[in-house]
Length: 378
Image: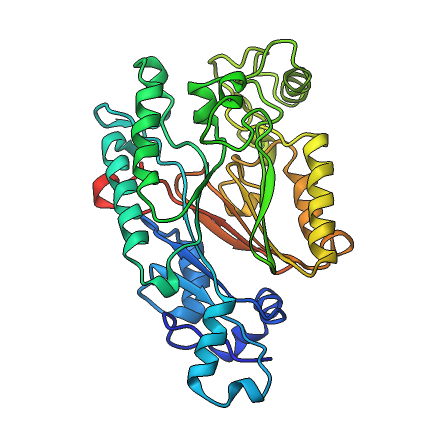
């Protein structure tokens, strides 16, 4: 196995060099550098990453792999040129949820929400990305959804809040890809999103793109089945009502308030059947399978982006997509992917989390800037 090289990671203990996930990265001649700015990394992520990076956690984590011929490795300069040619970076941020209002709390009133400070954190993130040296500047930014908070709808400020948030992101020296989260659907319906210039499609916001010939990013829309944003007679909403109300009798078809978790204390992963989560649906999952098959046949590596979480161990066990099992089966299936999926990146659960599954796939849930506001990073 060739060595793992990174300017940001001092060493890599021998036991990590044989992990399936790093072997998957090593098996390709392409390098990837993931740019993370986190407010507070959760303990599972720290314990995993510290096994080969050591504290403090670097703001930039790089996985660099090389497969160079002996002739091309005759000088350090040639090695560096080859490495730079095969690398790309991207920025990731999730759940900004900014609003021009005083700080508040989550629904359970247990966690502070820094609404105005979240926009400052977004601005700082953009500045940080722009200040990176050209050799490692991001190719694109992945904004994983919930850019503005649902409280803006109550303040009649949805358009203005969105405009100001997009203004910050547009200052970045690279394009941005925006995902749909539940707070987008608190502020706008699907018809409005289908006309939004900042999204790719809006009504069905799933697609793929390749920032490098050997890599594919697959963007999923976890609210194709939803109680939010869809007309009453939309087949996707009808399917969502049947699915959620069958699994959780506390939820009414209109998704209105109430004690959604009554009697669900020991329900385990069934707790996911609440209106603020959603489902991918069979149409999107069929498309997803085809995208994975195409990537595997083209020897591409894949990173999956979704607002709602796909692996229950990458969150607290209640913020997964309703049909996460179907998506996870595709991601982990050797018959479908041939091991091409490297990572899954999500938001939604503001505390953040990290899990490396039995297939060696990294599941990263990003912390929300809402947690710390101006005092944090994300």
